[in-house]
Length: 254
Image (cartoon, rainbow, N blue to C red; front, side):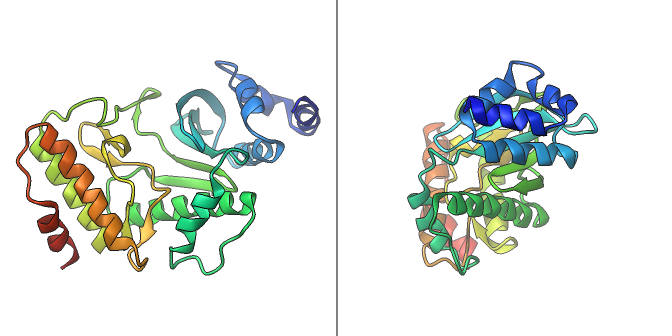
């Protein structure tokens, strides 16, 4: 990796490299985790003004890291970067094949990850335009996705798994309304909705749309039911009396 990094440094504008190096040695962390192509992709997004300064990592998942960054105007943005080498691209491809929006799905690891990133950006676009409470998508290229930062002063709002809603009924109703709007107006199913993918502002915001799929997918209704069951399970643990998942499902798809 060191040879690759040296070659990149020779190509890049030193001032912009310093922006990546600023705070928490973030550039060194990226150099250890991401390949040459990813670092160059980040550089191109810096040139477009999407990113200017990278700060610390917000979360590290099995397949992607999310970083806090600033754009050229000093606004906080979230940078989601999928790791090429460690991604479960076979599982990703399985879900892509079932999505009717993608007629031809690549078979190689890099191509699958790039398509996966593109799909998440498209999902956010469709959801945001339909008025679903999601982070506003900003830009994407290859395996890097930029979106609205959900938080204040560089500190992200908490996940619902970590902080109980102040008003469980209000939050539950808002989430079911969001799932319905996502299905009816955006034509999507989140497919991985649970307390792990909801941020509280304190109003709920749906995040992580990498699994989101078109409602024409033959598994869409099964995935929708799973999302509803996950929400019902969580809120019943808080003591909230909710309708049965089947009732909620029927109301959404009618």
